[in-house]
Length: 262
Length: 340
Image (cartoon, rainbow over all chains, first blue to last red; front, side, top):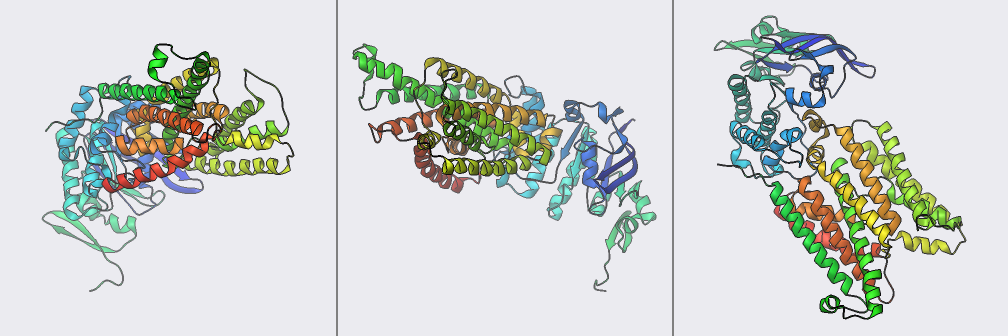
């Protein structure tokens, strides 16, 4: 198995402010990685670095064994799909049109999709269980449904790697679990490499193979969920005190503040 | 369940052809009416006097043709700029074209220039130069100010528009020339019958620009959604932005130099089309161009006959009918679906 993503001594800063320093990690093909860490630790910056939206100050990134600098815009689109956090459309598009947008780079000379594109979109809609919403406007559907639309769009891009930026924020418990089930199914059935930024370590810990804890500047930790709990890394990286316990062989972390009820 | 994609190429082609047919019919009817109304039978059987024939072929038809070209250019530019700037309030003049043209035209008028170039007056030439130079200035400053979002461009456009308008007002205030008033009227937007060469050149340029813009339709869908997302899906966003700005600036500047500042067409026609047919730019752009042409032809005909034998600047009329028409459409449609 080769590395889907390999990050080597990566430095990144916004102006004077150092965000990432000497970051090193790798994700194997078909692996499910959760990225967690305090606000401002550079999780979203990392996703932008992986998609060439931002450029690192130092270090290099390899995708599927090839340096990221050697990727053209189109090659990137064939390799990495990303589900972003922000949703704002100026103009109304329906679900089908939104998912089909993932195929734009492959449209024919007249600017239209081929029957292959239509099949891919149809499969993506079915896999994410939103076929019945195809003709609905994006701002008419619920937040959970919309999140599935964006995941369907990432699927329709037909890439080996999918990145997600907090896909379960703003979702209730049932919808959070549904999204993780969906991601896990994509990993197992379509052998996608999945990286998801999350604040919910307890939930993502039940699904992902490894966790990358991203602290401030050069503090980070990569390991499976067991080693994170055994080494008490969450409290260290997030600088929060709390208790961890084991339920049915799964670890959970409960953050505890000063004025909590006893 | 099988999915129906809204739009296919055949469907698109059909609606374009229907649109062109409606446009042609509108143009014919509008060139028949006027102080002296002609009928189609008369025209077919050449049963018209030499003067009427002169009026129809030399004055009304060129005027209707020019109106349709100007309308199409302004409307499609508005639709494209709204997408690129991700702002429903954008119009073809937002990047400084109107104020740039104003300064250029006023400068030519105040200096009392007298020459013709390619059959055009100094006012038209200077308006074109002013408009195009201002867009270039806005583009340069805007991309320096904010490389990653379109807000830099938008703000620069607004600021430069205000600045240049002040310069125009300054020139109006200090000028004693009597031509200033006629330049102001010219700036309000008027369609004059132009010669055939001008109209043909303008038609070809606008058509080429429209085709270039329409080919970017799928990319504009993505960029109007999210520029960052467009990039990760494999669209070269800065290239698309540059091409669209250059193209829209060019055809709008030509339109302004021929007809002055005809407001509202570039703002409301794209919205009206979007409210009815949806936001897919592959369909939005051609239909907007056709609808802009139809709107402009009708508006110019009304401007021509409403206070005849005098004529109203068509720019005043587009705002007068465009505004209320758009508000009705907006209220009616936003009840049904939440598009804006």
